Structure formats: structure tokens, C-alpha cells
Image 1: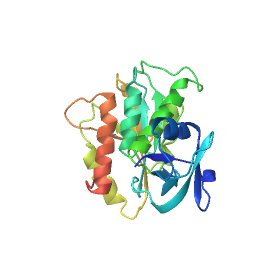
Image 2 (image 1 turned 180 degrees about the vertical axis):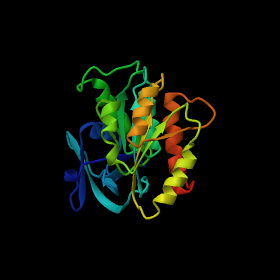
Image 3 (image 1 turned 90 degrees about the vertical axis):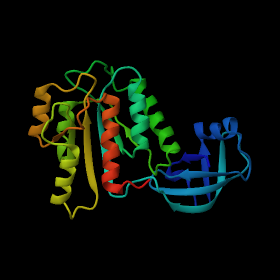
Image 4 (image 1 turned 30 degrees about the horizontal axis):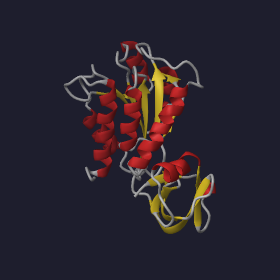
Length: 253
């Protein structure tokens, strides 16, 4: 069943209104007709089954048939991916896959070894990346649309360390702590915590300068190894997110 997101002000007691690009997609691309069923999510964890009415010139309404809680979110885990800005279109793949894997927020950042850059806050890349996150959220039946933030610096990220219960730094030269070891120790020390907010820092293609790693550790980030193999920047975040899912969901699909 086709799935779309709407804002709360588009939902009434009996109907949901769809306009804009989704209206065009429903009527012009999918060519759905009156009484066809679609899924709608309010972006806040509630799903609706809707029977379409006849389209207007710029919008289409649907009659609400069923309501249920979204199943696409991990109830007790919020993950922010801090991604070192990669070259080319790699960021698009990273956003798509990390949304599928449950990330709640994606923050691109520049660091000492970053090759690619975003010129300013109005750069069209951010707008395109948010659209990719939206499409990935629809496809994977997420209960929210993860947010792609504007470009940060690593220093700005580290100023936010107090916002997280655990901040993980994937570092290829770490030889003492594995991700598994850190998660097991954290769980042992924080048995009473119900909902966790975790930040994951992944470097760009050139990795981190040792001074940057030192700064991360000084503010409390846990430097972790992801195994014996060196992973590409577009792979490392997916490995961490997959292991966090297994850790909190017990490997359930």
C-alpha cells in the first residue's frame, strides 16, 4: 500500500487532506482513483488507512478507515548520526540507508580532513537530502521523517555532548574498545534508563586527525573500533546503526 506523510493540521476527525507534491504523485504518477486505499502517517507515530475521494484541482481528501500506532520506530532509542561530509553523492546513500535503519536525525559536519564542503546554509544540497530522507521514510514505513540538519563543525557537535546519554566515535585506530564492549558496559551501568539518546560520529574519507580524536575523548565521547577491517565512511555509520538495532531490538526484523 502506498504511504505518505502529512502534517497534523491536514487531519480532521474523519478525513485527511493531501496536497503539493504528494497530490501530484497520487493523481499523475500512481493514477490512484476514488476508493483506492493508501497509508498516511502524521509524522508523530500514528498511521491511518485512508480511502481516497475524488481529486480536486490541487488536493485530494481521504476518508479515515483505520488508525494504529506506527511500527517503524524503536520505542526506547533516538539516534543522531553526525556524518563527516563525503565527496560526490555518497551523502545521498548515507541518508537513505540510515533512515531505513532507524536514525532520527542526520547532521553533516566538516572537519580537518574533509574534502567536500557546503558553501552556505541555503545550499540546495540540504533541501535535496531532506527529500531523500522523506522518500526513504515512506519506503521503510517510518513513523517520523528524520531531519537532515545544516552543516556543522566538529567543534559545534562536541559542544552538544551533554544532549546525549552516549556519544560514540568510530575511529579506525582504536585498539582497546569495541562497539560491543562499550554498549555492554553502558547497559550494565544504566539499567534503569528507559529511553536513550545516542550520538554517532563518523569521519569523512580522510578520517580524523589525532587532535580531533583527543578533543572528542576529552568531552566524553567513547572511541570505538568497528572491527579489524577499514570501512568506508558510507559503510561505517550503517554498521553502527545496525548493531544498535540488534542491541535494542534483539535482532528482530
